[in-house]
Length: 293
Length: 322
Image 1 (spheres, one colour):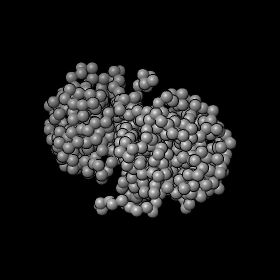
Image 2 (cartoon, one colour):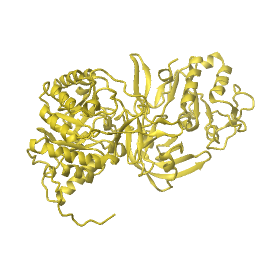
Image 3 (spheres, helix red, strand yellow):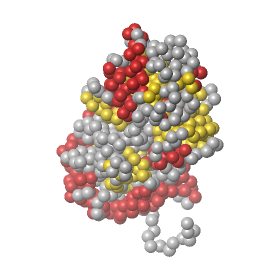
Image 4 (cartoon, chains in turn yellow, blue):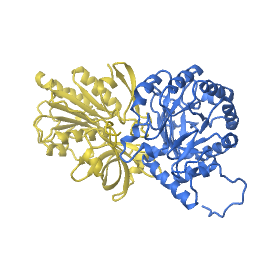
């Protein structure tokens, strides 16, 4: 009776061993775990539901930044913002984490749009990095990545080796990993970090879009993840340039598999407003449904 | 109560055979398919599944945040989000595999007429039983407003009773003075069984913004924090039910086989699993195995032999302190 139910057995519960767990400024952490079932199936936009500690058994949703199907590891970037993630930050290499994943509807690349603009803010950067990695070496797409942070970036920014003429003069700082993948990136912050655009990611994205040729602009699709006000700004930007835009959302979450309707977000549908579950209806939504203009 | 001899875990519940005493609780498992996304989870590990609370018309539910973890538990205020009974009966029930487990509808409403309408629709459906939710703490009308008033509770049960011969399970609120008195009234009104308890009303506050964390301002508390309260309520309701042969689904904070056994001993025939699924989606198999091991260790042939075996005021066995 299960053959006609494709949703069945798509999420895996694993005792994931912590392979590395590194702290960065601003209570940011990069965590790598061994979780082969999740790693094999993870897609950009997928997240996992992690039990941070036995003393706080309700799981916390965390976006996947990278996954190696071959080696079976999954990477995350998270910020310790509450009791659960602070307990997670204390977990050490070699310990096991109960992990449910991969979960969620991923970002969908459109072959008709060859220029994905990836905009990530804070701990919204990981899904953008995941999309970028899947596009590395793919000649059909020419992505541009814009990342923003108000705490030091959890990597050492360096002047990019990839020229982007549409960027403002002096905005040269990039994420080295993306440079290694030959994917152009630029950084934004209000903190005055060297080589970064001093302003919001949306300001930098607007500048870049404005400098593109009309023809190139018709090829752009925006993908974004970050704080809610940033996503609202990104949605407005997309509307301004009449570009399709997919955003990844977060909300307090209990089950993570669609059972409790605890993590909903209100969206506009053809039949009026509806409450959609971030866990299995999302976390990726069309920005126009979440932020109707 | 008849005993089912084929499996030590099987129970007879209002004439329905449950494969195990575990019942997955309404509001935790959507409309019965959601948890099957998890590899290793099977609806067959549960004796029955209570579907999401269903009303006459579709409801959007409450504003986020809807859930928040608290010490040994969590608050929720979903607000009965559901697509309405018509869609549930016409589009969702036909997709369920009734050979896997028993499916129980959860009927909710703002008026007695709405409870009647929803019950009537489910009566004319393949659903195995109907749970009357007169204890939802997260809606402005109906729900616990009915459940905390014994006369009103009985009126809702009486109205639904007239419309169906399917087993009727009344879900009782712990947020009332005398749960036993309410149970008595519901038995007279025709309920076949009880679910004891729904969540306890609670609140959490963000001290920086001085606002409630839950969008609905308040929510229902579930999880291990409420287990002792739930156990006592099951014990109290069982005193009323015992002589009428009315079974109870005991629920509230069960996360282990030991917890489940406590509820059975207190008077439950079946036990509800809710919040524990959020902690461990594969918990049912573990609890079933733990109960089986207990039965073997105590030389019992059926889990049904445990119901209501609590010996009050008896000499205590020696127990190591702490």
